[in-house]
Length: 224
Length: 356
Image (cartoon, rainbow over all chains, first blue to last red; front, side, top):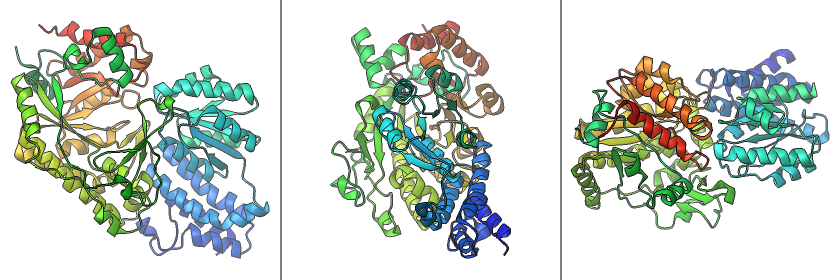
C-alpha cells in the first residue's frame, strides 16, 4: 500500500470508528485492520509521525465533527471515532514526547461552577482533540480560580466554558469576567444548551458555537 | 362539571376539556419562596393541578451501596438511590444538583452485570400505593406515577454513557444483559402501578439533545424501543385505560413515530428551543398529546409575563377544542424564573377557559 492510500485508510477508520482488527464495529469492516494497526504500519513504513497525524487521523475526525454538526452521526458514532483516534494516537506518543510532532495548541475546557453536566463538554473535548489540539479537561463544577491556574500552567491556551442550566449562565458570566480581568489576552469560547451568541457578546467572551466543530473552526483559524 | 381527573384524562385523549390542565415542578428555593408568599408549599393546589404523584415502595437489592463500587472511591457526601446509583454533592453553587456515580462503569465481565443487585418490588408491601390511588380518585384527582429513566437512562446511569454506548455499538453481551435486567425490573413496577389503578404511567429516557437526536433512530429501535414497548404492553394488558406519558429532553422529533408505535399517548416536554411545536403538532397532533411546551431555557426565566401569556394562549389555540395539551414549564422551575411568569401561565389558561 502506498503512503497516500495508507493515510486515507487511517482517516476512514477514524471516520467510521474502526478501532482495531478485533473490534466488531462497524460490521462492514469486520476482520479489517483498524486505526491502531494502520497507524503502526504507517510509522513502520517511514511516513513522518506529523504527517500520519495531520493527513491520517485528523482528517478522519474532522469529517466526524462536520457530520455531527449536520446530524448525520450522533453521540455513539463520535465516541467510536474518538476511540479509533486514540488507538492511533497511542503510537504517536513517543513523537509528541520527543517534540517531533506538536499539537496545534492547548484548549482548556470545563463545565462552569455550579453545573454538573458533562455530555456536551466531553463531546467537545473528543472532537477538538481529534482536530490535533491538546485538551486539558478540568471536569465539572469548575471555579474561576481553577481555570486561571490552568491558564498559568499552559500559557497561550484557549479556554472553553460549558453550561447546561440557565442558573449557571450567571456563573459563566462571572468566570468570563474574572479570566478577562486577570488574564486579558486569553481567548474564551462558550457553549451549552441555553447559551446564544447574543449572550456570548453580552458577557464578553470571544466565540460561541452551537456545535463542537464550530469551536474547532475557530481554534484552527487562530493558529492558521 | 367534570372532576379534575376526568378533565385531565379527556384532554389527554383529545376528547375535549373544560379547562386546560397545568403541571409544574418547583426547585427547592422556588418552593420556599412560594411558602413565604402563601404560608404553605402546596403549590399543586394553588395552581389547580389535576393530578398528584403516587409512590411505589421498593427495597434496594444491596446492603452496603459502597460495596457496589469496587473501582471508585466515593465522596463522603454520596447518597444512593434504590438502584445503587450514587449522587454526591457539588459545590455550594450547584444548589440541588448532584454528581452521578455509575457503579458498573469500568466493569469488564458480564458476570459482574449478571450479579448486580436489582431492587425488590412486591405487591404485599405496596398496599399504600393502592390506597394512595383510591384516595386520589375519591378526591376526583388523577394518579400519576414516576417511572422515568425507564430503559436507556437506567442502563446509562448504572453503566456510564461511554461504556454502555461502546457495548451497544460493539454488540457486547454486557449491554443485552443489563438492558434485560432493567426491563425485568420495570415490567414488575409497571404491572404493580397498573394493578393499583394509576391513571398515568410516566415513562421516559432522554434520547434528544439540543440540536438533534442523541443516537440514531436505528440504534434506538435495536436496543431500546422493543423493551419500552414491552413495559407499555405489560401495563396495558392489566389496565387498557392507562395513559402512557413519555419524557425526553431535547429534540425528540425523529423518535415520535416510534413512540406512538410503542403506545405512548402523551409526549413531554417538547422543548421549544429544540423542537418546533407547531410543526410537531401539525404532524403528530392527531395521534399524540403534549405536556409541557413552555421553555425553561428562554421563555420562563427571561421572558416577560406578557410573553408567557402570549405563548401560552398560542399553544392552547393551536391544540384547539379537542385539547391534547397539558401546559407547563418544560423542566424544573429553576431559581431565576420570576413567579409572575408562572402566574401568567396560570391566568392564560383561565382566560380562554375559565374554571368555576
